Image (cartoon, rainbow, N blue to C red; front, side, top):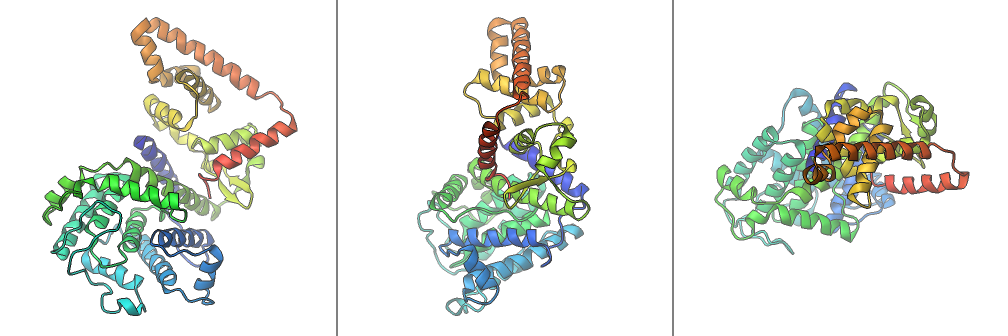
Length: 428
């Protein structure tokens, strides 16, 4: 699954770079400010500070006082702009003064924390509801080792693996008396922006969203549940790698992909106008419903404006799929297509691949990596396996042919509504 995540982000990253990279984080960039407002609400909700969109706007306009909200937004806006400038210079800041500065800004003008702003804690701390046991002393030494680890992770790992590890290690050390979650998430997003990605959003407004985040962290920080190692890079890394990062990486991917799509669309709009899907359908010579399927199956980038989806021929991700191997294509298709059984999955993958323009020979190579087909090969021989693939392709062709047949207007509306519901979690 994570390989599919990385392939998806890599294709988007290449496309964003081709369009000139991340757009400026100016007040005129409404898309960027929307992402920042969304992040502020979700991140503070994880800490127990809840605000509606209207309340957030009231705070940012000065009509309402809420220092926790205003400080987070202001700090994030400043730090992410710095991250963008650092990215353009090939820099990434990760040191103690920088971390102290984030904490100090998060608690600016907060009287209860006036003496502890930007200062590491001096004693033990217990994280409510967590199994990790943070170190009780030598916090500065732990943070120095953390900074070395984080810099190394950004060089060694892909963006999801690097962010998952740095975030887990920072939250496990828990260097401040309060505000560790807010500081950790702002730091995580600064690192993402400094690597050329937009800030991501870890959702936390609803209880189930917060619980999912907590479970992901608990699985990742398992190496620190029984004891905390000495403040050395090798010791911290050894214990950190005992963790299971799949849940956290999936969470980060879901928080990053829609914002990356929005950044790509914003960068493109500086050059060319986006089109409604119904207008774009004629360009691809397919139905609008097919374009909606492409969006849901990671073939086309689209953004939502009001109740309508907008895209552009340059946002066609299929153009970059030629760089993927048949095995990678199988993994990508199989992880995004819902099926009732292994046989049904084979049929649907074949149908979608044909619909995406792959030749029969290409589809055969893709299906050769299907575990169901491989099982047929092992039990009944290669010839039977080839015949099975040929049969699946014939069924897929028939399915595509029927799908192109006219449907009643009522049925088309029902299908479009179902597709819209499925897409809501994927696009902004």
